[in-house]
Length: 214
Image 1: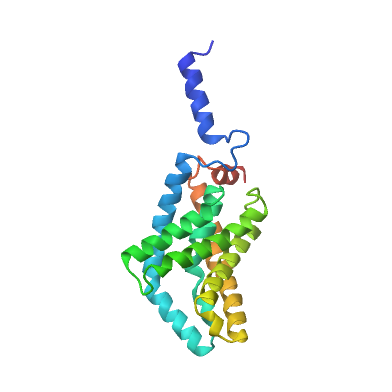
Image 2: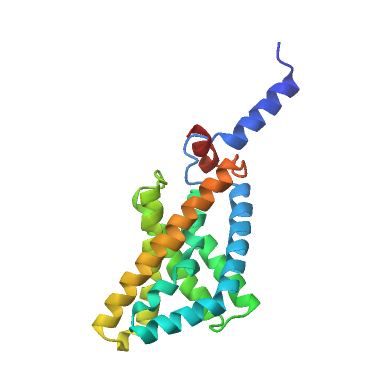
């Protein structure tokens, strides 16, 4: 006979690892906590990259206007990473926006406008996983999430100054931002997620259980 305390403990452990029916879209406390950790960690990466990234952005734009989008990729990491790890509606926007807030608080060249561009980038990344109703988190979806984060980055720039740029500039900027986002946000985010899962850091997430089955 199973002791009642053991039965309760077993149920609690199962609840931590197995989603209840219909819970795909419901946030748990652990999702919020881990999302916050990812946002802060990614924000520190943004902050460290701000100066060299700005140099690279300026040099690329001087070489060929619009090519500066290639420098954007690392600033787009939060959205795809949040979506891949947490797998809940709004995770990409939450992590990318929080990362932008951290970057702004620590100080950068763009001030609080960083938060607005973070929101646009997060929305772009979110669209990719929303399109599959948060049911598929494969490498192609990760790449698409990173690419659309790049499109979100371009769109913010377009409505806040890019309107005065030529069509050629805008086309090059959105294409290079999307390519950079796919590689340095989508692919890198997917690799980081796989690494965390295989290290056992995501046992309470579907991402961790998926990695264990491979």
